[in-house]
Amino acid sequence: MRKLSVVIAALNEEKNIGRALKSASFADDIVIVDSGSTDNTVKAAKKYTSRIYRAEFRGFSAVKGMGTAKAKGDYILVLDADEEITAALKNKIKAILGEKKPFDGYAVKRVNFFLGGEIKYCGWGNDYQVRLFKNGAGRFDGRQVHENIIVRGLMGKIEEPLLHYTYPDSSSYFIKMNRYTTLAARPGRGPAAVVGMVFAPFLKFFRMFFLKRGFKDGMRGFILCVYSGISEFVKYAKEAEKGFKHGR
Image (cartoon, rainbow, N blue to C red; front, side):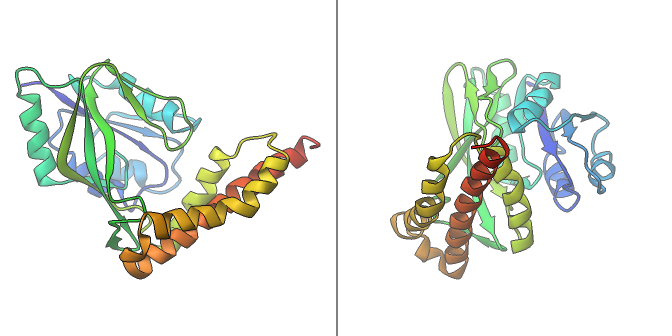
C-alpha cells in the first residue's frame, strides 16, 4: 500500500484545525506549516503530529509548497484547515493508494458551506479542486491567493466530497477578505483601479446572483453575492491605495 502525506497550511485556525486533522488522522504522515499563529492552532495540531514547521507567510503557494516539499508519502493530499475529509472520501483515497496504476493527480469534489449552510449555486456548486497527487508530480502555480496545483501527468476525478466550512459567520468573512484582498491587489493600476471600483462589484454580484443562479441559495446566496461584490471593491481600493503610496 502506498503511503499518504497530508499537508495543511495554517494561521490562527484553532477553531477549525482539530476537525481537519481528526478527519486526516488515517494518513501516514501529516505536515503542518504555520505562519505565526497567535492562538492555539499549534497546540491543537500537536495532538495529531509533531511535524509542525514555522514559515513567514509569503503567499499560499509558497507556504503550501514548503509543506509538500517536506512530505514523505508516495501521494500528497493538500488540505485547508477549514476543510474536512468525509468517510467516503477517506475510503476512496485508500482505494486509490492500493490501485495498481493510479493517476498522477486527482481533482476532488468540494462541497462549500457559508453561514452554516451548503451553497449549491453562486458559482460554488460545481467545485473540483486538484488536491491529491503523486509526490514529485505536482507544484503550485505561484499565486499568492486562490492558488492552483499543476500536475505533470494523467489526471482523475474524485466524486466523494471534501467538506469546506468557509466563512461560518460574517466576522470570519471580513477577516479573510481583508487578508485576501491585500494579497490580490496589484500595485500601479492607476485609472484601472478606479474603473474596477465602479464596475467590478456590480458585475461580480450580477454574475453570481443571476448568471450563476445564486438566488436559488436563498438569503445565504444573496448575502454571499453582496459580500463578494464588496470584496471586489475593497481589492481595487487597495490597488488605488498602493498607487497613492507610489505617488500615482
